[in-house]
Length: 138
Length: 138
DNA sequence: GACGTCGTAACCATTTCTGTTACATCAAAT
DNA sequence: ATTTGATGTAACAGAAATGGTTACGACGTC
Image (tube, rainbow over all chains, first blue to last red; front, side, top):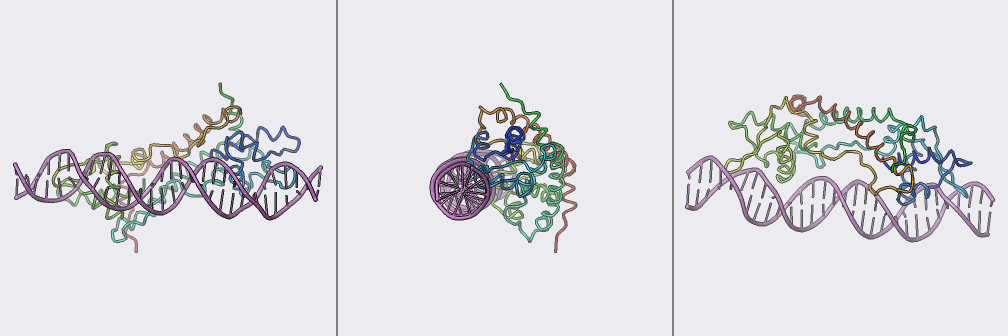
């Protein structure tokens, strides 16, 4: 999630400066301080969600598919974190116990409501917001 | 989190039926379908948070330290999950890049606000609520 | 056809999570 | 005082997730 947002924020800043608006995974990786393959993997998820687009061939690379003002962190989250944050039992509980049988759907509903509230907060922040508030430190 | 809530819910149901209101980690482990040591570890965190109490010696065990109506899932979460759910960069980003230098505090603030919203939802649900809504399935 | 980049598989190291064994500690019951 | 039955905790093992690396085929521009 953090790497994805970092990449999009960096693209929102840098892409407009390029004549074709295209950057490479290696350039993004340099800012994130990681391997280009890691960036390509994450940007692949963002592309599947329609947030960025990739070009192949000579002079290939990545560009934003939508305006940074229209990409919320909720969008990023949905593209990168498909699973629920709070998990149920790792191994199924004892089916002979009424509490163990009945509790999973109750917890799932509570968790989903809580995570939904979290996503609503993320929906209120856009990549453009993050790019604007990001100022170089000392 | 799920095991902790399961344990508390089970205790809220079972403890009142016991003359001294005490249950053992082994009994809880049987419902959760895990090892008693796992239960003791988690209940240890809940005890540090003042949600349950433990007794040692002969006939020892655990009991709720507060009424189930007064224990919210926010309390449980705080006792069991001390770290933020959404993490920042695993390895520090490239300090030579302005975006990389400036983005961590911005994201941390957004994440904290989102997680705070999630915790607020958890605060609205108590162990007593979960115990009441938990009905044995088919 | 050469070049530069994506796309993806394969692999490794590290960490995290669960579960397990083992044992010292403690206080009630006898 | 001894026995008993449980907690408290360290140590360990296995599985799974995570992050990073190498390698290489696919692709489209030059």
